[in-house]
Image 1 (cartoon, rainbow, N blue to C red):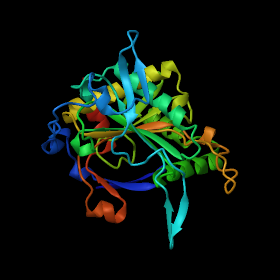
Image 2 (image 1 turned 30 degrees about the horizontal axis):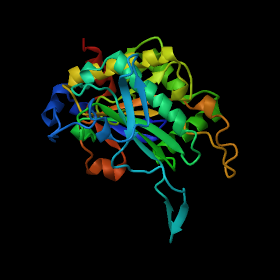
Image 3 (image 1 turned 120 degrees about the vertical axis):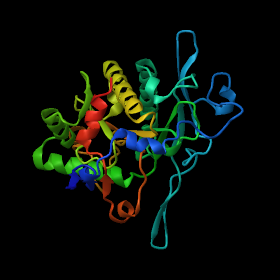
Length: 339
């Protein structure tokens, strides 16, 4: 019998349809293993730096060669120039499209898939995320800053060269508002972090854990909306990703590499999205003077990794419920079995 599971953070329901249980190989028929576009040159490769746009930030090795580069998105969803305006159009609310949209070129190497990322490459990527988030948080126009990675055509990537993106928004997305409100409510009622409680229960049960190291834990969430969804939590309670120290960055690189490798082997190079959810810039608002009062205690930064194996159909769009044909316990078992 299927089971409805409630996510206490996102406040959404998922239908775990165990009777429709599917194995990793059942998803492979939908796979696109390479991008269809054939470019005469790659603007992200070494030697094409002038084609990628003006450099915002870079990490370099001892010889001065770049390891990561950050450039403006050529087709930005938001632009940093201009004045932030909030206005009404009749009964509808509008906000000017002020923000930031940056591309993180993760490595000079063009042919790198999620299965052969190294700890060094991933640590450089996360250090770059950290520096850019710290810088963007200085701009008081921005309400939320989110590093994310699209990998594969079905996950939204349109350039093959390994890259990620960072977006700064002038508003707080609804799903983030829900997470923040859930965390605040849980802390107000129990004086505990809801994410720490979830992590502790996962460690006690053990059936959904994929991998853990000294500083991080990766598991398939109890109410997984989509097959093989994975969450990564730092074991140390902290609300800000950008406050991670060097040792934690090394641990983060290790666990993300493990998850990427296991998904790559288990699902044969799946398209996926990775999102880093850190706390929003703490800006006191006159209308909500106590809104940020407990955010350091109630919020816990984390990473979501979601393979894109199935589409959204009428039931999902009509109800907001998701039918997941792979239980998180089964998904974790498949991923743990990868060697």
